Amino acid sequence: MSQPTTDNTGSVGEGARGVYKHDSDRVKAGSLGLLLLLITLGMLFGGLVLVVLAVRVGDEAWPANLPHLPWQVWVSTASLLATSIAFAEAVAAMRRGSDAGIRLALGTAGIMVILFTGMQGWAWLDWYEQMPAVEAATQQHRVGVMGFWVFTGLHGMHVLGGLIPLGMVAWYALFRTWTASRHGLLRHTAIYWHFLDAVWVVLLLTMLVIL
View 1 (cartoon, rainbow, N blue to C red):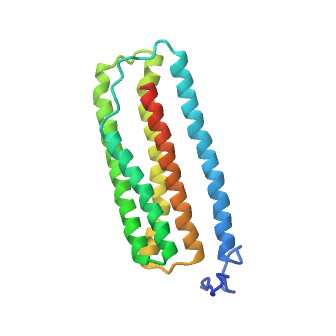
View 2: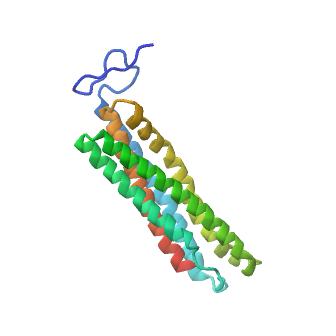
View 3: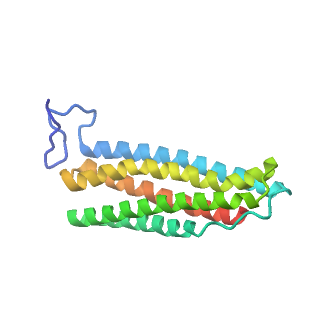
């Protein structure tokens, strides 16, 4: 089976089975797809925040005895910020042409993501253990109780989804040759994780207001 080949200009050779004549075209298509994805996710998270805030403001029966955010949330927040910084360093290392720098930054990002997911799971258990002390008999109370799980759970699903491109760029950094399209993949992956970082900050601020 013939494999794509590239020359110094990044064009794809005759053996390629693709719709892109140049790696730069692939990167541009990826950028457009990422933009559409982030717009969609922004609308999803933004709509969720607005709905919960509207319920909170208009509901006089909102429970006043909800527990404070678990301490693990603050550790997970710090780890997610560190993940974003690590991706920024990976992109900077790519521009410097430092393969070792890319591998170190991506390894750091992977460790921080594992820490984030572990802390979030622990926070879920902590929140669950405090629920018996909270009356959740009415639907209004239930919205308040479930808010923490909805926010963190939805965000956590997209964090897990982000592990796929993270694993791909880590694989390329360790075992494959970097091409222009793979440079684009690293930049796109970094942007996605920066987006998750920004979304988490908004969700965290929202939970501080409503809980």
